Every structure is written in structure tokens, then in C-alpha cells.
Image (cartoon, rainbow, N blue to C red; front, side, top):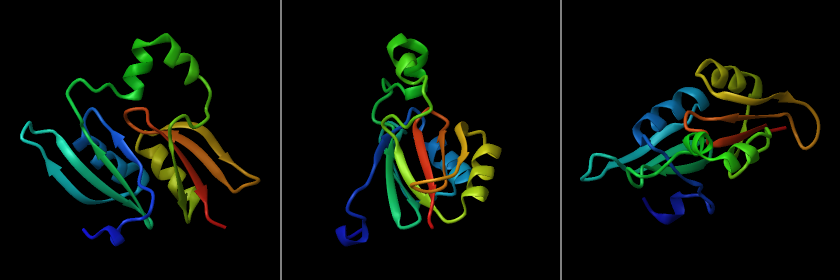
Length: 141
């Protein structure tokens, strides 16, 4: 892909199971897979997903990587800072139909951190994915 085919900012996320993340992010959040590269070790070396006009990149960097969810299970400090529903090291995604998106995420097993909220800056909700990465979804007005 040419560099002009990418937005100027691209979140890059690590997953313990990159292949499962590709499938889950498509099912739960409606992202579309656009690329996957498998490393010699059989792990996801590089994956790309489209979210509207945006792109996220993901991979399984090493078998020693620990997801945010597993980190919380093993670390009291991480449990403390994750006790709030706020987005900590997360990604903001604008969607056209927040109600439908919310229902799809919930049905796919996303951990809902906040129900749909009204008011400025826009209608929104917060969720965690299968490995505990946090996502903030806002409706375009």
C-alpha cells in the first residue's frame, strides 16, 4: 500500500492472539480486515483493519506479550487503575449508528464499560475487547 492510502494517525495494538482479535473485532465492532501477514513462528506478524475511513494495525509481537486483561489479573496496580470505566490507553472511533453498534458489540461479548451516554461532546459508550483493550465509540452528528 502506498503511504497516501493510510490516514495520518494509526493506532497499533498488540494481542496475545492476533488471529482471534481480527475475527472478534470484525464481529463485535464491525471493522473490516484488509491485510494479514503470518510470521515464520505462525503468529500474526501484521494485521490491518478498517474502521470507517480509519485504520488500526495489530499483531502478536511475541509469545511473552500479556494483554491488558491478563495484566490486570496478575498486577494489583493495573487492577486499580482499570477500576474506572474511562478509556486508559484506548482508541476513539466515530460510528454512524451508535445504537446498532452498541447492540452488536454487546451481542458479541464486548465488556461494556458504560451504557450509551447523551450530551457533549456526542452520544457515546465505552467498551473493552476480548483482551481488555479499551474503545470509545462516539456517534457522528
